[in-house]
Length: 614
Image 1: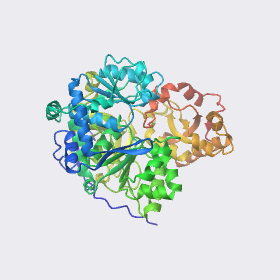
Image 2 (image 1 turned 90 degrees about the vertical axis):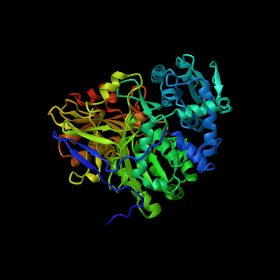
Image 3 (image 1 turned 120 degrees about the vertical axis):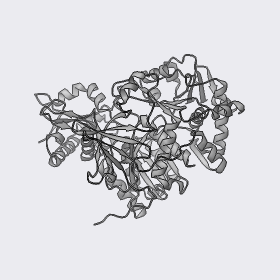
Image 4 (image 1 turned 180 degrees about the vertical axis):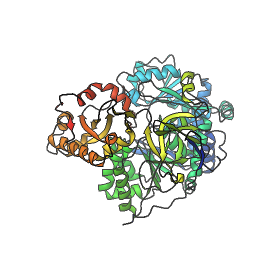
């Protein structure tokens, strides 16, 4: 039976130019040249404050009600804040560090810094609020040497502020000044009278001005600062518009929690709304128990035209959409597309999203994705055509060159274009190592054609080169695809999985157990039963054994056939780099930290906690 039709959207034609290389690799380009990108991001704010000054730009919950800021009010605030930064003689050598979560004041200060040529450095709030040792925050501030540090709620961030060496930086808070730290009220900055200084500073901003410094972590390294220039941000949004011209057809609206300290939320989504005069309704929820309810409440009140999330976010939201008709209608009523990125989306989640959209609207709302990194600001490829399954990351956007290089049986992806970073902040060594001889950024991911006979059908993500490993037999195990299949087969027990087996005879699994999923199999257990006891329940173990059997039945050989699993009750650690605050599991870091569990998986005398394929 044929599936319902997709909703209609004005996309660019799916087309790609392929330049083959003698080594079996190639370079892919969009046939569209990149259009004019403008001078700086601040021009977008000036445009919309002139064209639609009363239109809502930013909104957040304050005391339970929506506090809204229009485009006109935003520009006025940015000019005052910008003057305050100019008065303080802030500069690339004395940038602005922003510690707190998404919020109106955060947005205005970030825009003000970029408006006057001062780099904004939004830092993951998890480094202040979840980290126990504040090690990453200490390192970031040491590298940045900020002249101003902002935290919206001083008391909430007080412990972090006391743990770091501020080296004389001015601390600015919106509310609740912390004890023992001298602070300036955000309202005082906002009360600054805009004068000639802010206008002169804005006029001096150009495409090569540093707009942001975004910090990204490797598997074991401390965070490194990625320079984001105005050119990178401008080129990205121009390319997105050329692939998604429907964005200009109506005012876009998003309800978004994705952190602005990351390129997905802070560059792709935030700048897309600013570029197109859209509204950002800041979601104070997150995809986790106790916070997803806030997201649900926000989506009841505001109907998005675009919805962005990571796979974990959809996993947590879907049960609410499936059982609540009024929420479902509010969510899908005006929705043009659903967008996922940050990690691979299991196919079962893809199908559930399609199914629930059909229930709501009688048609499939388009599901799309894109691919890139902090170093590419972020979009390199984007889906702008119909796709029927998860995993397709699209085609190169205008201006981007995508080089495919043979590497260990895969095609390694490398990127060149105006969207690519000039380098890492104060780390010339890392910058040199990140680019090949032709100036392509080595991103570390692999890709393949979704249809080798039709390149215009797009590229599929094929995992991280560094995550893949060989079994003792010499057979390659491709971790990214297997991880997604494990999550799908192991529902509802599996929240995420670490794939083991390097130089072993077969594949094993370290399973991060889903607390609500495991408890759903044992409904009579009290809510305070430790997760370690829940995962030991025979019903949970039997479900995981069924998943191993299902994976074995679908396997094509030892390279995708796990034979053993161990359920873990300890969640991944952000301090040990096991997880990002978007929920992406760092395989290498988890394997290093949990080496003792890997040994238990493969013990000569079977460990009683290990679930074996029968």
